[in-house]
Image (cartoon, rainbow, N blue to C red):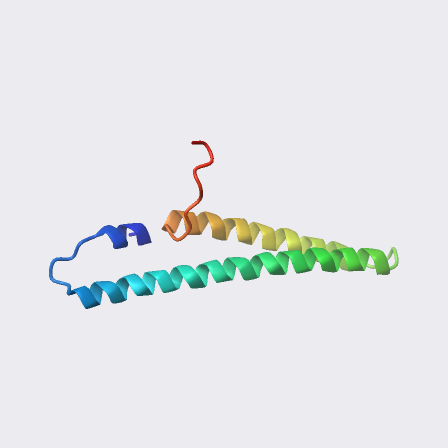
Length: 99
């Protein structure tokens, strides 16, 4: 069950307070997830800057630039997977680009 389905479901025996607590938990989880996305994005940008610095300062035989770029690619794939998962769970709502 996704977060959108939980928001829209009506439970007859649950009081107003309990329903509000459940919605607050979902909203809290969305906030944490979005914060994690921003942190991963900042780490990707930092890794890219680190690779640039290593490229400018290291000698030809050092492989720190390659490793920094490899980490950036892995983190970028993780970020894309997190965005897809967030959309699938209903925590992220993309804009309607095609309309």
